Length: 610
Image (cartoon, helix red, strand yellow):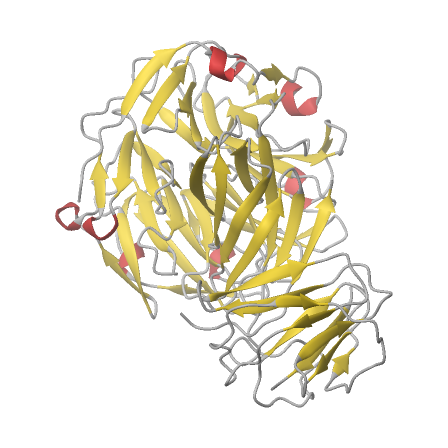
C-alpha cells in the first residue's frame, strides 16, 4: 500500500462463495431493547405541513453543526420543502430563496460540495419532463440556480440522482436515473462545470428508478447500481470504464418493479452487502467477496406490508454495533427490523415508527438533535390521492455508547463521498469491526446524514479507527474516546496529492512528512530526530507511519513541554518506521529549526525532511 506522507487535523467539534442462512423473526419491542423508545414529534412545520412528499435529503447547508433537510414532492408545480434545523430540536421552514420557491417535481434531491468550496450544494432530479436543477450554495445562506450546461438543460423524467467521484480526481461526479430514456452520467471538471460522458453504465434507455454509488468489490473506486433495468450492477474498472456484472458472474438480478438500492455491511464482515427495493418483495444480497453477491433466496420478509418498498434505510438505532433496517412502504405499514447481531433480524411490530398507515416515500436515519442516537424521518404522500404530513420520530436513546465523525476531504472530494470508515471496538466482550461508507444520495432513494455514526454498545472507546479516503490515503486513529463528535481532516501526500495552497514556494526535497498543531508550531531537529512543541501549545499531535498496518496513526497528549522521538526513515517512503514514543526533557532551549511555516488561524504547519 502506498505510504502517505501527510498532514492532518483532528478536533472535537461538539461535546454516523458460501451461503449464510439469515432468519427473520417477528416480535414486539423485546425486553433487550426496552430502553430504546421513539417519540413522535407532533408540532412544527416539518410534521404539520401537508403535501405529496416522496424523498428527502439531509445535510448541514449552513455549516452550523445541525443537519437540515430538503423534502421533495413528485408533483408538477409543487415546490420542495426546505427546513432549517434551529439547533434546539425544532425546525423552521424556509419560504424564501430559489430552493423554496422553484416549482419542480423533485424525485431525487442530493447534497454534495460540488465545487469543493466548503459548503453543500444541491442537485434535484425532476420528474415532469423539465430539466434537472442544480443550486449552488453561496455560503451566506442563499443559493444560486445554475443555468448553463447540459446537466441543467436536459428535459426528461428524472427518477433519482447520486453523487460519486468515480475517477477519484477529487471532485464528485453525478449519475441521474431516467424513467423511460437513457440515463445520464456527468463528469465534474473541477471548475464548477460538468461534462456529459457515455459509458456502458448509462447506455440503456430503460425505466430506471434509482441509483447508488458504492464500492462493492473493495478496490477503492465506487461502483454503480441502477434499478428498474435488466443491467443493474456495473463494476468500475478505472479510466472511466464500467462493466456490467451478470448474475452468472456474481452480479445481482435486474428488476423493473423497484425503486432503488441500499448498501451496508449488515453482518460486520468487512464488505458491503446490498438491499434491493423490489416490489416482490425486497431482495437481500450477501456480499461474498470474489464470489460476488449471493441472494438470500430462502429469505422472504415476513408479512407486514413489504410489497411496495420505497425507502430503504440502514442505521444502528440502538447503538449496539449492528446496523438495523427500516423500510418505508407506499402501501401498508412501514417496517422496522432489529439486527440481532448473529445473522438474524427481528421484525418490530409495536413501535410508533411502524404504526401509521400512510403512503410513505423516502426515509432516512439522522441524528437531528445531536445526542448521539439515530432519529427517523419519513416522507409521506407518495402516490397518494391526498396530501399527507411527514413523520419525525425522536430516538430517546439508551445506555449504549456511540461516536459520530465528520470527514473533510483535502485531496479527496470535500464531502468525503465514497470514503470508508472502519471502527474496531470490544463490545460485550467481543471484538467487532464495523464498516461505514459515505453516500452522496441515492442510497434508498433518499439521502441520510453524511456524518458517520457508529454504535459502540458498552465500549468506552474505539480501539482502532481506520479511514480509507477516495484519494487512496489511509488514516488510523487509536484509542478514540466514545460519546463525542469528531471532525477528521484528510491527510494528504504532498508528493502525490499536490502542495497546500500558499506553500508552493517552500523547499521540497526528500520528504519524510509534516505535522499539524492547533496553535504553536512544531520544531523538527534533523540531527537528533525529534519533534518539539512550544510549551504554550495546548492541543497538538503527531502522525507516524506504522509499518505493521501500512498506515498512519495519530497520537495526542495534553503534556508540555515534551518531545516525540522516533527512528527516522531510510528514505522518503517512511517504510522503516514502526513505532513512536514520548520523550520528556527539562531543557526547553530551541533546537535547530529545519522549517516552520505559519498556517491559517486554526494553527501552524511544520515541513521537514531527513
